Length: 382
Ligand code: HMG
Image (cartoon, rainbow, N blue to C red; front, side, top):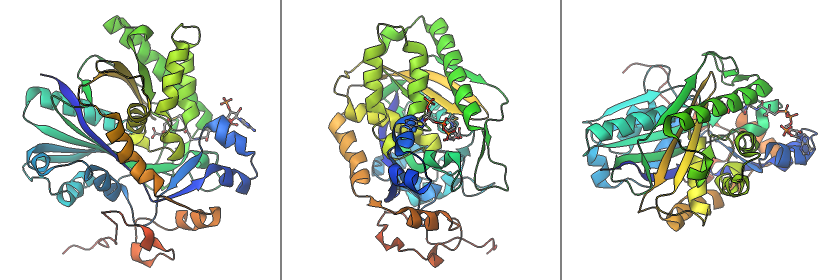
């Protein structure tokens, strides 16, 4: 029996900005954002969406009734959840009509949370082969207007169904992980935007990638030649490129792996940072856009969550992965987005997305997503 990702789906906001427009508004050379950072567009999350609706909108695209009846665990990986106590997974379970005979909970460790969920799901299905686990990564990345991190914002969700005999990616092999108490990026309870030491965070990311990659090679005896591609958590596409270069620079496999890496960034560079979902959007991007991949090929995955936790693991392409199907499902979301001007984005950004969604002075009628945030209980008990 094999275990791994059987289905995968992506969702983001129907609004975006061009980073070249943002650069002009901030008095920055657009090439800094387009080439130096490697981001072309950024999803802008409207008041009609939060991490719960983003997650439900992603998962609803792939779940059948049989899945809803069989799933016995719903795991939400997020660092921008809607409640400090109650798990967003409980709302998602209800919105999607998943059986109540399931565990539903949330995992938090910055951008790493969904990877913890995937690993837990794989172990659960290995022990209980008839189970299915829904793991959803959902986040809204915010740094603040006119900050250095502004160009690395974004948001959206990736939903994955973990089952036995998966169609897409077989998991369950060796993992290498490293954690350390580091203040590179964090968001205390009283803040809506993260505090970040940007340059330090990029150094720690590369260090953790190198540490976990070394550990993984020692544990498995595998090396670059065993991999068809690497996919990375992509806070911005240049970050993954720097990490990959740090291990392939003098290798004969550099050209091949750098070429495949480009396919893995095609969606991230027009969506921005998804935090927990970013690594899995890179995977989707690779699978949907590369025409060099074959069944059985090994893909390396590097997950990083500030604070900090890193994990390197790998999977092998399963017999049922269909490039065109994945491509259509992602591009349906991305091609119908509406471009915002920078003043429109700034107005939207400054609106409290979590409260009084119905009161926003912005035309959200264009958001035709299946699940919308219409407002919240104002802290009242029934
Ligand atoms: P910055 O200081 O404005 O940018 O912020 P910079 O001055 O370092 O320039 C960036 C790059 O643009 C440089 O290239 C410049 O040379 C280049 P590099 O040397 O790095 O290769 N550049 C140009 N290129 C072409 N034409 C030009 C030009 N000008 C300059 N004219 C920074 C950049 C990433 C620090 C900032 O955006 C930031 O703080 N972002 C947020 C933090 C972040 O994303 N960190 C990533 C690692 S941590 C992580 O991944 C975890 C995270 O996802 C959170 C979580 O886990 O929950 C963030």
